[in-house]
Image (tube, rainbow, N blue to C red; front, side):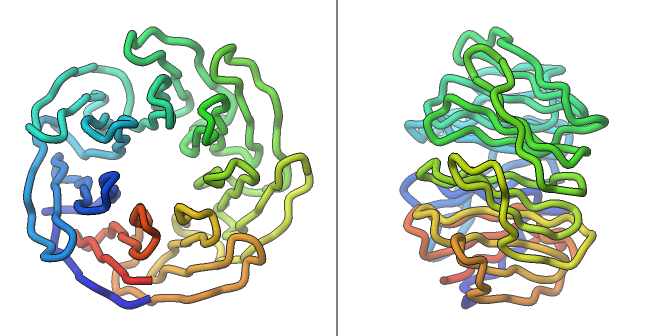
Length: 287
């Protein structure tokens, strides 16, 4: 990994980064209540979305890339027009985190112990997940948008049918709370990173997980997968580790100054990795 750019992006912690579909820009989410847009190449700021009253915690693009949803610590969810930076819809008192399914028809919104699942665009509530103790903070849709996978304060991972709301499977193997879940782009495996630093992988049709990689215990480990499903980037205090998604072999590692290394995302072509950090900065690496 080679550091391409380090950007002082926000006035406080940066919570996440998201590339647009073309990979020509990326968006950063800040504890300073705004979303900023940065152009890839010259790394100039080219836009800003202001409207939340507290930290912006999550962002999900619609399938056509022209709009995106955000969730904030002010408990509101907003739908934005990407081109004009205008708010199209505002949903107060809804939740602090969210994720839109790949087909754009289902929105999951998290608040503390529950995940509420809504139909899009009607925003009618389909079902509620309340299965992980005090907090459900890890969830992801399957690539075909038919399943929702959730994890939280307990070590279990549950899989839910998106239409019926019925639980269809439970994945066991973790012994600590689940921090982040990833579904492979091809739908053939699921990985989780837990508080104990264990990266586990469940292959399709096999209920037994295998240990891919072990990080030090503690902190707030995070993971993201490359568009081709062949690499997984892991973040932990002061470092980013790149591992092979099949063997778990470490491919590269980069040490960083900030202790809090938060959200990460690969560029659409898989050639760059951007990460958000507690030191107000976004770093972009060439892979």
